[in-house]
Length: 168
Image (cartoon, rainbow, N blue to C red):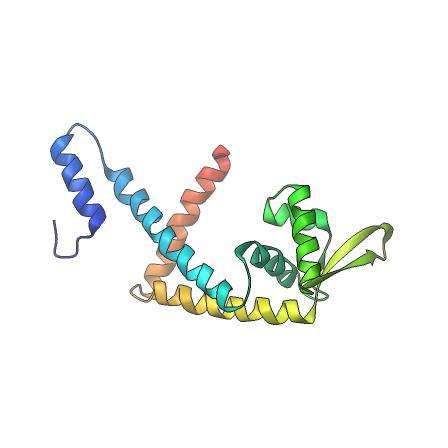
């Protein structure tokens, strides 16, 4: 073990001593991803909490904000971006309307449909949250150079695309 070892190194080393017949390289990668995911989850929850948002509220509001002016999407488009059921989305929209973070508007292209629109208050909250989130995530990555970040992003993208292609 090197001077730069972490808990995963210690775990893998112990397993190798007990089961030298197995290749523990997947554990070395994915255990670190899992541990980093927990740090990221805490940072995200803190950024959202400081903006008075729940993670599910962030999902909906950020989808609307990313849509650009006039910051509106149909409930179906929101479903596609947030990967929740239609009943869950209806409940979420209702709750966000109640908090005055979004409003429902008639779709001018189809009077039978509605569009969900980000309110000014919703935009203030989501903009504050993304600023806090980017700052927190930059701190999590501060030990990596820009080139290392780019390489890591490329490797994680490759891994993610493999999962997506396999339907995992």
